[in-house]
Length: 146
Image (cartoon, rainbow, N blue to C red):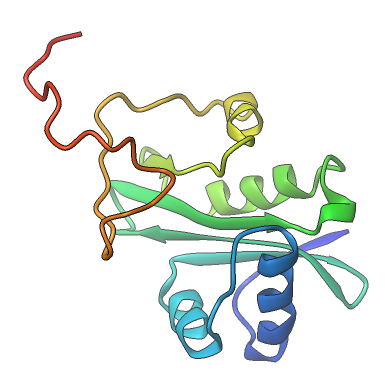
């Protein structure tokens, strides 16, 4: 397995298929290409000429970075591909930057094993207002202390 940093439009169709196979949904080609081009770093994992993993980081290049869209082909899950992608993505971020991510359901333990912890005050706003990742709390106890 080889991990490569950078975006090459020639493998965009393979990335779209990989995201679908890994359960990360359908990606529209032009939007995915724009997202990958605008990312701070894109890491891909390869078995020869076959794309087996992908992930990306968005960052201000100084203080903050967020990992998005990490996907590994189902046949390659549990074989170190995700760990290698995360190492490459983390290595692209400046020392001292805070790293964030949203794990897909069932993969929280993987990220915990890489040193990630729950962020107690993280919030999100989705365009359509709905997502299985949102807790549905419309107001909650924002002023509550730990």
